[in-house]
Image 1 (cartoon, rainbow over the protein chains, first blue to last red):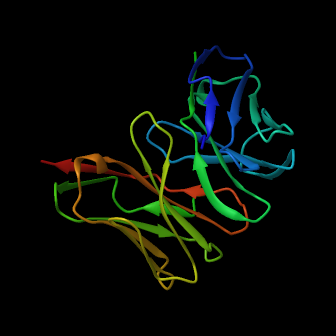
Image 2 (image 1 turned 90 degrees about the vertical axis):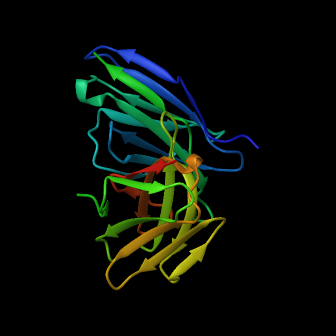
Length: 114
Length: 112
């Protein structure tokens, strides 16, 4: 039973660039949530996708956008990167239709913005 | 702001002792609570959860206690082992499939 997978594992970008991160949910899960975790902090909720639509959004600017594909995988896009966007980006999945809240996390993508 | 926070940033315990990690939350509407364990360089790992209609739930070597009156949550780890060394986060949600709100975490250190 495959868990949540994310790619790439590490990424280095420069200010102003754009980045796309990818996530495949745990087998049988249809809902994907994205979180940003700064060093020494707890994860911060960015947004959640269900049925290919953004269902809920945290307090993040429009530079952060996403997409969910018919196979439930998801992408997180960040435009006009800032130094402060350097963080571990986590993807979590759960079964949304039956409101199974337990979210299972992937290993994350560590983004460094120079 | 955050609706969930932890009282102590670091907790040091002797191997074999029991560990208690505490958490306070502020959102009265929160009805689902989860404890995660995060090892260095990894994503959070689900440990145990509890719903607001329960006061206590037990797993393997772990127990979660919920006190809704004072909005307090705790994680008890029995017979702490070196592999328990990690950062522990509590998280809550208002229900349904909402995004989780995390606290800052408690770093559990196991002394030999």
